[in-house]
Length: 217
Ligand SMILES: Nc1ncnc2c1ncn2[C@@H]1O[C@H](COP(=O)(O)OP(=O)(O)OP(=O)(O)O)[C@@H](O)[C@H]1O
Image (cartoon, rainbow, N blue to C red; front, top):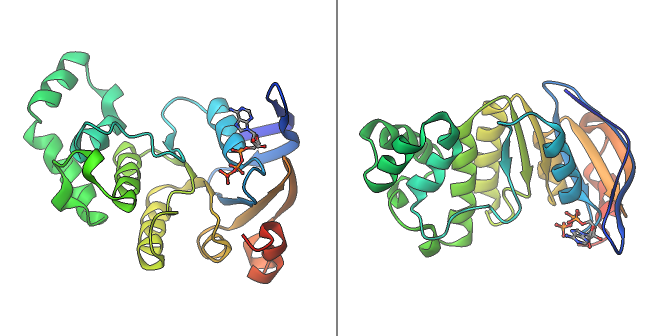
C-alpha cells in the first residue's frame, strides 16, 4: 500500500523525521507511539501525502469548521462526491436523505442529539467525536488518525476504537495510551526524536516494554 525508503522531513530549524523505512500493507492496523515531539504527526502527514486522494484523516486539531453544525461538518466527509450546486443547497437546507445518513453515523457514536448544533458550542470530546463521525461518513479502506480519542474517557475510547477498527480495514493511528494501542492495533511503531526505534507485532510486546518510549508522560 505504501513504502517509505530512508524518508526525511526537515523544517528550517530542525529535522523532524529521519531514516524512516516503513512498509504498510493492506489490512494492517498500526499504532504510532512516542513522546510529544517525537514525530508522530509529521509521519502521519508524510504518509497522507503519499496516499491517493480520498484517504480518511482525523487530524490532531480535528479540522472542523466551528460555525457550522455537526451535520455539515460530518457531511464534509463526502463533499467531493457531489457537485457544488448540490453542496450549496445542502448547506442552506439539508436534504432529508443526507440527514438520515449522517444521523445513522451520529447514532453509532452517541452524538445524534447534537446534529444541528454548531461545533463551536460542543465540548472537546463532542468535537472529537464529530471529526470521527466525518471519517466514518467518508468511509473508504484506510484511516489515518492523530490521537483521535485523546479527549474521551476510556469507555468511550474503546467504543470508538471498536467502531473505527470495524469500519476501516487498514489504519495508522497515533495513540498516547499504550494499552489501547496494544488492544486495537496489530503492529506498534515507536518513534523517538524523529526515528523509528521500534516496529513490532503487538502480540510480541507488553505494555511495560512500551513505558520507556513515554518516560512517564
Ligand atoms: N510546522 C513546524 N515547523 C517547525 N518545526 C515543526 C513543525 N511541526 C513540527 N515541528 C517539529 O517537528 C518535530 C516533530 O513534531 P510532531 O508534531 O510530528 O511530533 P508529535 O510526536 O506528533 O508530537 P505531539 O505528540 O506533541 O503531537 C518536533 O520537534 C516539532 O517541534
